[in-house]
Image: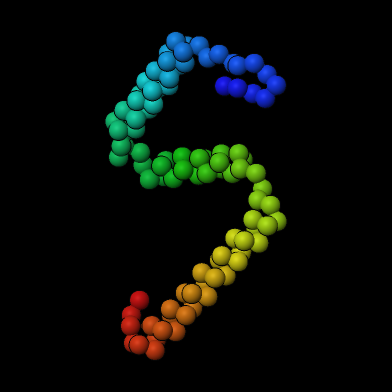
Length: 97
């Protein structure tokens, strides 16, 4: 990698390959464990784990900025306007949902 005003940083290719191989093995192990445990969790336990994951992600996620919140609200408003128009069309044409 080259950085402006700095020398080239050399990468230990052997170390990188070993780390990548260990990472791949770890991912393979996790995938095998998930496959072996498939269908063994109760719905309550699966839901509890899901909620924990969502809460963890929320803690990592920064608060959206003002512009992002406004855009999301505008998108939701456009969506609900389209749904209302669809409902009007459906009623006028006698279609069921």
